[in-house]
Length: 215
Length: 215
DNA sequence: GTAACCCAAGTCATCGGACGAATTGTCTAC
DNA sequence: GTAGACAATTCGTCCGATGACTTGGGTTAC
Image (tube, rainbow over all chains, first blue to last red; front, side):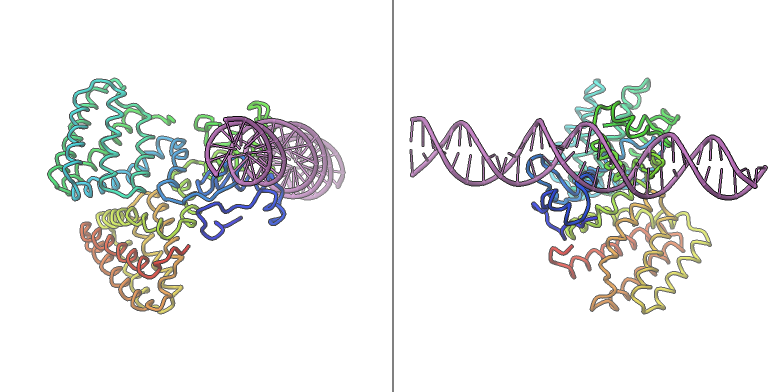
C-alpha cells in the first residue's frame, strides 16, 4: 500500500483527505490500511493531530506480538518455549559475563525476597522482576521485550496458585538461586545451563497441568 | 475489542451487520477492528464468505513480523542480530545433534553448489536454502519462520553484489563449509560456534558497508 | 511587555446508507 | 442424477455528514 515514506520517523503523513485522492481510494479504505499499520506498531494516529510514523524501534514493534501471543492456544505457546529457552539461556550467560556489584546485589535481594514470601501474587511479580533484570543485564532491549511478551503470557497461567503451588514455588526458587549464584560467580556456562533448565522445567509444568486445549 | 471467541480455529465470526448492533458500533469501525486483527494474522476475511479465525499457528503469526522487519531502519535490524545469532547457533547445534545421512547429503551438496557458482543471484538463493535447511533440521517451525523473516530482510541488501562481493562470497562459503562439516561430524558445539561466528560476520559486513541511516 | 485565555481552523473518529463483487447453496431443466 | 442458472448471503468500497480533539494564533487582562 504505502511504504514508510522511505524512512521518516517523524511526522510524515498528509491528511486523510489529501491521501485519498492521491491514492484514488475512499477515506474508509484508507483508514483501514492505516489501522492495519497501527496494529503492527508502524504508525500511530493521534486524534485531532495527524498520523505519525513511530520511532520503529524493534523493542516497540515486538510489542505488537503481545496480543497475538495472548491469543495463542497452549500448544502454540509450548512451541515457542524452544525459542524462549534458548534466549533466556543466552541472556543469563551474557549477564554472568558482564555482572557487576549492582546486579549481584539486586539479584540476591530478589532471590531472598522470593524465598521469604508465601503470597502467590507477590511471588509471581518477583519472579518476573528477577527474569527481567537478568534479561536487561544480558540482552538488548529487543531481547528484553521479546522475552517479556512470552513471559507475560506464561504468567497468566498462575501456576503458583495451583494445588501443587507450594512445591512448584520451592523448586522454582531453588532454580532461581542456582541461576543467581552462577551469575554472581561470573560463570556464563553455568548460568546458561541453569536458566535453560529452569525454562524447560516451567514448560514441563505447563504441559503437565494443562493438558487440554485450554486457552 | 473482541476476544477470539475463546479459541475457535474454525469459522467463528457472525456477519458484519450482526456484530455491529451486538457491539453497538458502526460497520466502518467494526471493519477497522477486523482489519487490525487481520494484519496481526489472527483473523482472515474472505470476500463473499465471511471472517474466519486462523489456525493460530505460531509460525504463521510470526509472518506478520515480515512487513514490520522490512520497514525497520538498518540500526534496528542490527539490533536484532543478537537474537538471530543466538537462534542460528542453536539451530545449527540441534541440527548437528540430530543429523542423519539425508541431511548430510543435502548440506554438502548445497555447499558444493555455492562454491561452484559465480552468479550473485544464485549464490544468494543457495545461501538461503542452506540456512533454512539447517533451521528446519534443528528447530521448530516457529524458529524456522522467525529466522526466515530476519534472513529475508538481510538478504535484501544484496551483499554479494557489492564491490567486495567476491571476497565476501569466498569468506561466506568457507564459513558454510565449516558449519556443514561440524553438522556432518555431529559436533553440536562446533556447529553452534561456527554458525554464531558466521552470523556475526554478516552483521559486521552490514555494519561496515552501510554505515548511514539507509532503509 | 507578558501571560493567560479564547477561538477558529485543521484533523481524526464514528456513523449511516448505498452499491458492487465474490461466494455459496438451492432450485430448476434436461 | 447431473449440470447449469439463480438467489441469498457476505465482504469490499464509496460517499456524505457530524462529533471530538489538537493546535496555533489572536485577543484581552494585568
